[in-house]
Amino acid sequence: MDINEIKQVPIVDFLYILGIEPVKHKASGLWYHAPYRNDRNPSLRVSTDKNVWYDYGIARGGDIFNLAGGIHQQQ
Image (tube, rainbow, N blue to C red; front, side, top):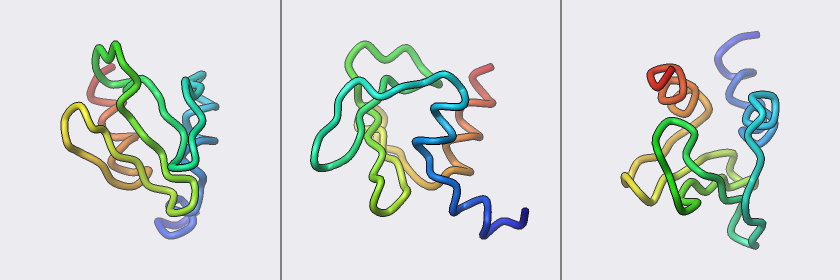
């Protein structure tokens, strides 16, 4: 797989493989507890249309690479 192919992997599938499931389903996207920090309220939104994420708790977001990096640093 090259970088562009990896970017096409749905973030929701990536999280599911890691055992992380959404807490809320809304029209704006799927909401999760941020897996890389202690998140009491689901603040991580994944836009399934654009395949991007945004964490409202820390005002950060991006693509699958940014998310994977954050999860990896937490471990």
